[in-house]
Image (cartoon, rainbow, N blue to C red):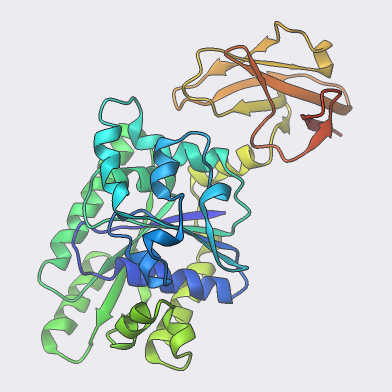
Length: 357
């Protein structure tokens, strides 16, 4: 699974156009895609024809309600494409979380708790570098930075790179940047000069695909559908098919620790040479313990250690076989939210299951 933010503090550069049409193009290729509208303007939501009256749960709930997960809030665009919508209430997140600890990690924590059967998660960000954008960047392993052909574009790219550098230094989180030329009419001389400067300054980050300027994008947004559905033979539809292929083709070159860590979380305990590695994502817990058939369901349980990133972990040496287990989180017995392997228990619920082979 790859998590990609679309961000640029400059407005009008094509973030939402890129997010919605790239999501649709990846879905057309057969990939499972989730698009999260993380902008209070809700333009990604509007681009698919939804209004605020059409949904009750949104990205706002992912930030503020710990028991609301992605699978509760998404709308189905088609079988391969889901959307978590947004409305104006999302603008209240900054104030609501003003005094909360680790508020910039809220979205990442919610995604980790959610069921995510996706190949790609795209997060459309607002035109600013605030709490919403920080949450998206800290949840992502990559960021696509759309730039339009204006005199402010180069400055916007520099500012975004400074933001990524700050996240690396203060949060220890690396995000791979990709720069996308968006809404480019390549004929004017000043546009070609901007293209040359981008290629000279950012040869590694600059994407090969160019999204050309066309009125079809506005027509498609007005019709509440991606450009490929409005006019599959248009220049815009062709550009986004090319972009989707380029993004998918870069998969082998993307090596992001955060994404590898997510994969481990989503598949439950990992069998290693040091023992079975249990991880629990309960950053607000005061105590997390592990109990199961390997300790005769001890009510005391085995203690887990809290790492600096808020993840609790423990290594346990187990013989071959199948073991049922649960976490004891501040006294509450909970199944592993990241392990889909379960076994029914005598209380009508289910215990998490790990197999050591």
